[in-house]
Length: 268
Image (cartoon, rainbow, N blue to C red; front, side, top):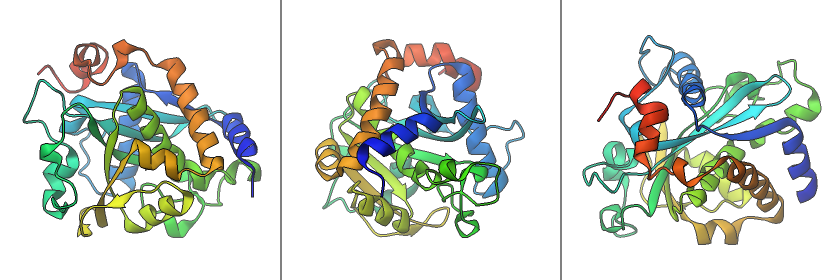
């Protein structure tokens, strides 16, 4: 098993987390989602513009992971944060799976707006997955059939973990302390095994496959992370912090509109 320092060093050698702070980078995230959710998995209808976009992107911040060797983006994730200015805006988990959330465990409607968000639309392109048996899940591990070197492919199964840590880092940069996610129970189990201790807050439902609602806060995240993933998180966080500025905050929708929304989603 790799040491913490080795994993951080090797990840930095082959990959780079990127904050989608420009129109072109946001488009890259939408194209990855199109490739995975529309073209490959067929979870969503083909919109005809090679981009998968939904209503929640209007108040989301996107993250990417680039593969240095191929100079391409291998995966994406977003953090959705309902704006303070719109009390009717919801998280995806609230709109699509609200009945699956046990309000006796946690009630989103009673939480302070601006302190919580949802990590969603995590996707890894198929060429960065290892096993064919995992090819039908957006976050599955990469297949062996590729031109990548073995020392690169060794890190592919960690891309889903790295993307969740990217989402967590984006949350911390935006001062979001409470995070929700809808995910496959087996992925949640894998995350928990790795030390990312998501709490299941309701039963599994059929939504693009069997998924369940999960919750984690910053305290639980950092208390559960083993040294090896804490180092990986630090590498990701430091890279993203260098790209982040207050003007890029997910709370600053005026800037979000300037760089992305007028182009992709229209004015609101």
